[in-house]
Length: 514
Image 1: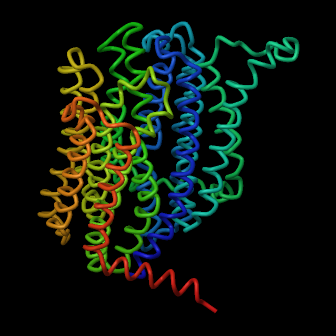
Image 2: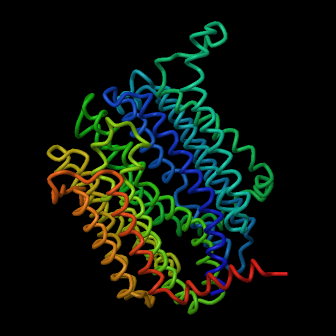
Image 3: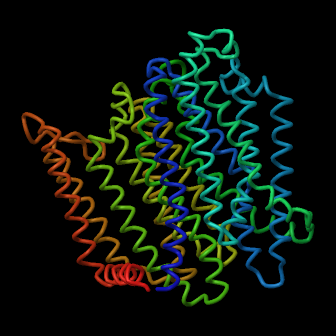
């Protein structure tokens, strides 16, 4: 229980930076959707380019985050040398990437259908390179158990990013109108471009916050160690690439499958609505930041106890992510107002994307068996299969069903990965997961969501229900959904008495501590 409390405390801090940061970033979604007209397709451009950068970030880090954790916690290896080797190798790859993008900028921009704005590509290439370099620096903070600085830097980026975006979209147009000489640099028709420029400014400034950590780079690249790390990280690179493809391939491919302005418009609607579903990705990300170094460290000390801890953590992870799923679904009538009404058609995809994120989180939990056994090739194989499934669904069904096929592609892609990892993993390295309990949580979640959809004439995973001739009012829908949501909370309290009692005891000790 002590290890779980430590994990919970660090997850809370990492979660604070991720959840609060993402919540604040949600403020940019209504800003963009209200200022960038849906029919312009401008938000589709933003969605598409950020999908490319997410893919390239995985390519440029090539699994070195996880590899650093693995080697920094191995006997006989100096953690500082492991860090220095990881950081400088990623830095050199990132620098080479920027040089190549600059040299072949116009051919790349033409291929991606951005010949009119090649600067979009150049700006985001530099941003991606800086993000890759920072990824190893953030990994060092996590490995050193320094979540406070981690959260501080993450939140600093968010606040700076939001501040500059608010200036560009709200204040700058007024200043340009009233003081044209002062704002001669501002172009009111360059809204999409300014989003990328702001990102570059913020990312560059945050890099300065890592100056103390950069001192450990003086150890240079240990070539024998690098060879060992590259052997370990090779399959992780493939795993990471196909994993990120499961997340962004639909947004990358959409403009090729549905070309022209219509594709950008539909992608913008889908990309805006998917932002609502990203609360699940935030939870998984916050959990991953704390859990990954935790598992490697605990396995180094006590492998047998580590498997028991993994089983407990899996149950709690499923329990709380499904709680988040229901919270979003039950209050989607309110959350939808974070985007402009013309984008609302894409809300049908939200539950599907959220459940796909649940599957992805479970898959991440199940992934440690091959990482701890140094059989990372299994992760690459399973993720590749899931990616093929997802891409096949996209190319076959997007022309007929549009972005709903994208949502289902992720659902089945991650679902396949999750099932494969469980069945293969249990044979390779058994972990006593509470499968019956996990199925109970899924069962009650789906039943409550179905009842909500039925009683409020809402969608159930994209399928519309029409129980009543007239849809209940917003107040009635919120009351019904709140009751159903509280039923899930009561189910948790009833089934997890030991956890609840432990939490209450911990709170009482802190309150009455002298």
